[in-house]
Image (cartoon, rainbow, N blue to C red; front, side, top):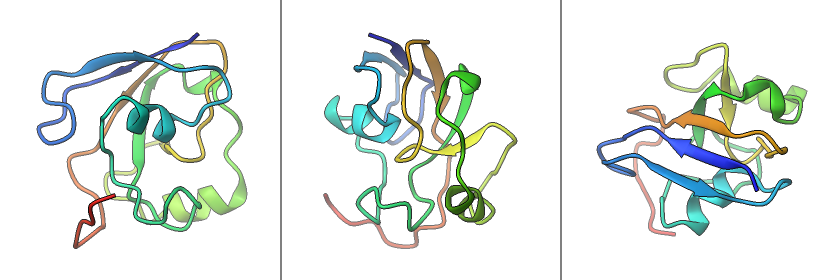
Amino acid sequence: MPIIKILPHPEYCPNGAEITAPAGTSICEALLDHQINIEHACDMSCACTTCHVIVREGFGSLNEVDENEEDLLDRAWGLEPNSRLSCQAFLAQKDVVVEIPKYSINHAKEVH
């Protein structure tokens, strides 16, 4: 199973973490399954940008970005060339390193 290394984030993962998830799992699902409660205001339906992550390593191993995700990413805070919506980024067999941006465009957080 591929390893997802999450870089430290003051709110979601203060010490960073390394988790595993089966290939075919979205990064968002994997984080949530391991109690890293990343925002996902649209319940992973690719309708917002709150689950935005920056893939620092392993970007090329993920599935292709589709047009809908690309359009939404344009609205994400801190967009970088290797940004993905974690609900749309599915793991292959390669390990990845992700950074959760400091901010999102979500003005109010809901408890999921």
